Image (cartoon, rainbow, N blue to C red):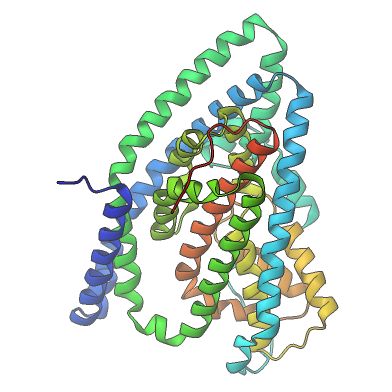
Length: 413
């Protein structure tokens, strides 16, 4: 009897979650549904906590070892420059696609909402300034950064630590060897945690279906459908661009990481896929020193799915209130979103936070975001899966750019 893969178990779990959630939705009272959702969410919360427990030590240990193995600061600068160039290009592509679609499909206009008399509270903090963005990058304490899983701050400290460790010669090799062992131990822990992935996926799906029911899809069906088609188009575009560098191996890449894409989708968390993603990219042929450098940066700077959603959500709210934006304003909004979104991956509901800050710049009511809060989980699933795909492609392309991608093209029929 063939062994069921992780992908198979997650898909089975997702179907079971949908059926369980719908049964609860139609057969239980409102109080019972609330209790069910609260109880079953414990499973998802435990799984995500276990993943978050792993991320900080894994990012630190792998990045320090990777930078030390790069050899010198010039190599770090060269790879870093190529990485950021790809990130900016991918972000611009994602935002532009969202702007283009929403500019030609005024989905929000169907709501025809009146402008609110006065600004109301949205529950989202929107005070994202240039100063707060820059200062957030640099940690005041590495222990605080690791305790709160501030990936970008851990990356900054690890870069300094890795360069300094490599510069002291033989004494530094002792630390590098120890951290190399730590990363192997954390990856083994990841394997244990992943046994819970199908159960967590079922719990997450069952919870949202029990509370919202199929009405969720009926109410916002058109917007959700268009967004998912746009996400699919973005994935195809990113894969097409990657094929310029690695040819048909891009299909092999997708097959290698399909479990992680599905896990991120079902749990609505790209962090859930991070530890195992490192292993899969290394198995694909990316050198560990590049994966450990590019992937953590990508989780802060290269959120392609989130970028697409930001332009979608911003224009949807503007259209809902009848706010007319010129093409020039839409393009400037795109640039604002691209700059303000960098480095806030640790902020809860980061995409909505960025959108809230951007809307205020164009006199668009922030209350419009409340229209999307109820279905944000549905969008977050697609965003998370696309973020995993985008960062995987970035790691592979930079590896190829450096001439260090191992393996030969395969024929996929």
